[in-house]
Image 1 (cartoon, one colour):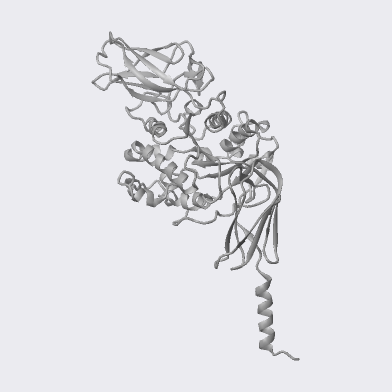
Image 2 (image 1 turned 60 degrees about the vertical axis):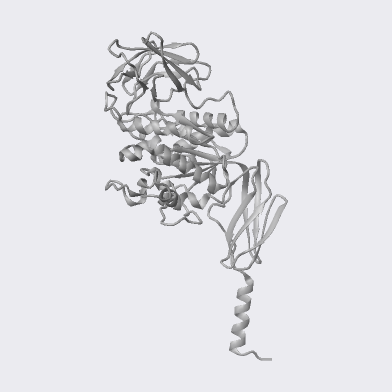
Length: 495
């Protein structure tokens, strides 16, 4: 029987439709990827509408039907750490296989330029500090992924495919991959993985110069009278991509459906140079951002470890509230507003003339130690330094006794060199006291026991009100824990 042209066309169209389109995985899913252990394995992608998709990995399998838009999302059972797995995703006629898949702990590395600056920059500019030997290690259990810079007006469902030298796929850690990855992120992961003993995946999603509000959903700010002013701030020096929520929409929202272990964060320099309201309410916005991210990841206790800004600008007597001190103070206040967070100091890892100091190797060590302590329960790991607890005036009103938490084995004064400035370990530096006149004067300080510092001050300060420490853009101070971690700066009322 002869078929008409119309009939042949109908048969062809039916055959084409039934053959099915290729199964396409979300951009986050590639060879060498890491899934978060002890949480359901989430796999996402697109195919033809109403097509059955089968997902399997190491004997675990499930099938789901795509929606009318072709999107699908499959869940495999949670599992413990593993390597060398193959993930298979099959449609009606097409199968995708991802090789060398791992299950371990996934950390998001976020913030602005001090997280966004890559090893290549520091190695090129400071080869004596960031040597080739510091980043050429091969570690198949450390996996790296770069999120392409993207600002978007609305929350995106998928990240943009990265197209720079690193590429758009997960890569195992080796000299070439490390070189094009976040320097701080890499040195954090390099130190963390051997200590944890499971595969570690690092997702690097950061943008230089970005403000905190760019990483926070707009509606969260608009619904709060306290945070609404962050939407109204205008600064001609701030380009449009750094406006509210744009980086959250393009670089964080697409990750919410992918379980992670936690976040490491370095951001705040741009906010320090912005409006007074932005500086003095930074902790309110930061705490809200952290809580919102946790809610949208459906991980209410997700750990969040962040850096307190490094020293920057001239080391000299400054105004009463230098911008970096105000911002650092707000960063530290965040510790009291949200739980399961840790702050690590970079005050002694800065340079007066370089807002991107090269000391990311020791900072990465501090960050990994803070994570080991906060998240993995390692009591022998110390990443956060001493933090003031109280300041009490003596009965004779001739001295003030400071008590500190988080001192490790003890407090100590340390010889410190910051650029050309040297603070001898024979004396403590960086303490000031003011009376009711609001005029701060230098105070002499001595360590008393494991966790206390005694301050003596000029006799003209008859009514001490406030003690402060490290209160400068580039602080010259040297109070440490015996484990080598600097005390966090503070401005503390006297009791």
